Image (tube, rainbow, N blue to C red; front, top):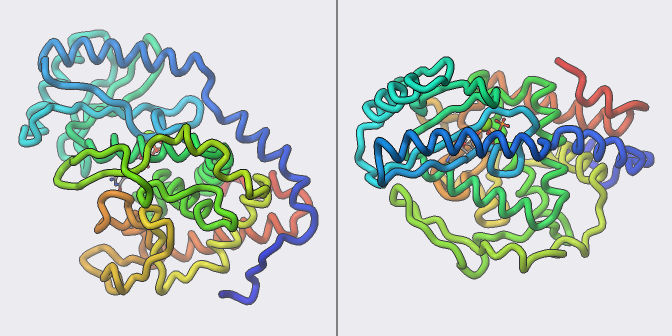
Length: 335
Ligand code: GTP
Ligand code: MG
């Protein structure tokens, strides 16, 4: 624990509530965007089922996990039923089919880390990436969406954190900073850790949903309607939570030893995960366990340089919320 860590913010942090809620509201996608997404999905579905009658299309990522901003691109997964298909072959075929319709910029990127077909639909103006058989992403999208239904403060906090990360340039995995998915996991973990807790640990409860994908067993309590009001014993406001989130990552998190785990609803140690040394390119400088692929550290992209950038940004955010007279402007200032 750093000497600057605090359990309470200086001054009246609650004065910022209305500001944060306004920012949150302004980022929520309007209903008509959902309609356009459905329209594009229907078009894609027609082509896909025509060529592969057993296949299905799923939305995943921010367009389906409830943490998406207005005007985001959409992520689509083509589930082939058969796990052993040649992905490149499928993607090349799919690109051919879609090119013959009036879709624009159709490209198969078969050598990317996650191979995809990219396209733009001129009718709806939506850009979209389609991958093949990435079912774990579809399932973790459902888990995040289910968490967001329990307490609205998760969605509010994650919107503010994502907006901050995008403004400050620390949402770029190719530059060694964190994915949006990683930031949402950080927010869920943080709300599980409040006292009283604002979110439960769904994977530690009675199992009501269970699927096996790519030899990973994914199971948890998904009857989240029954958890309405779970967090109501905790009265913390959104501005208190935003401050406490940055204060935690700036001054309280033990980067040398701890792993955050929403699966366990707790901290784990790097030692028990065997994440204490660098293996290949995985340095484990900030450790965020994937809820289903438990050997997977979402912090693996972070290197010696970018961990400094990240920690300086967490500290900057905490200091601004603490001391700046006009924090809502400064916090999101472009870097
Ligand atoms: P935006 O920044 O708004 O586009 O957010 P996003 O949630 O779409 O962002 P991101 O590109 O981080 O991830 C898209 C989806 O891919 C996530 O919601 C996850 O379902 C999945 N995903 C991303 N990274 C990983 C990863 O490292 N492991 C796994 N299993 N899934 C991932
Ligand atoms: Mg996305």
